[in-house]
Length: 113
Image (tube, rainbow, N blue to C red; front, side, top):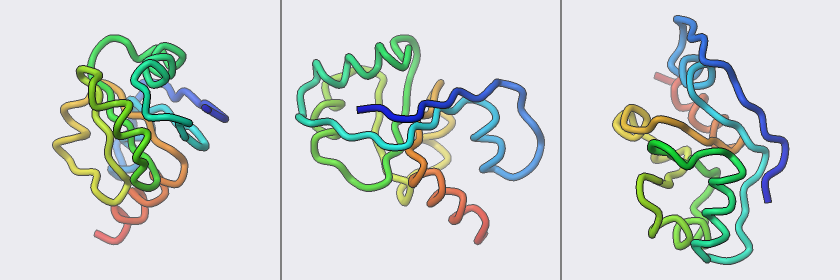
């Protein structure tokens, strides 16, 4: 379910927006797939990542029907893709969880601007 979890520290460095996101309050996972759209499975993932307090934003590589269905009944958890991530979503969330592919898409978008 969750592979290659990496936790980054909270020491923020001034630089690009992508570096700020990565350095300040993000979790990175190599891949994130739910076998079913059950909320119970998703809550288990939240507990494993210790994301039970505050708001969390999951940024997936592509739209995933199971992830969307499983997360829609969980309070203070939002799901988006790397292509549709916006500033408001980032600022309202206490914790961001990116798949590697999604973060690469966000980084590529930010480097174009």
